[in-house]
Length: 125
Image (cartoon, rainbow, N blue to C red; front, side, top):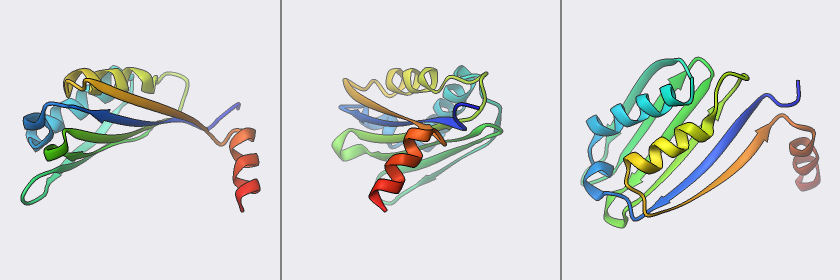
């Protein structure tokens, strides 16, 4: 096995602020993003913060998808971790970017469990 999975770190700016503060809508978006990636959704849960903001988790048979929102800033941060050859986390990322109407985004990808990851971890220890 080359890696144990792909882990995307997704930064999204200038998103739709109403969507970022709507837990029900974010639950639907997380579910659809996971399905777009080819993942099996076990459960989706979102928690609304007072006065604003939502944290959401999609528990997947293949790992997880999480999102944290800051509506006042129009910002959302997401992690998408999938295992297996049949899933594509980039498709989930594209769905999140589109659904949140992000005007700007950055994606970083880690190949979890790869030799390179172990070398970097050992060097920083």
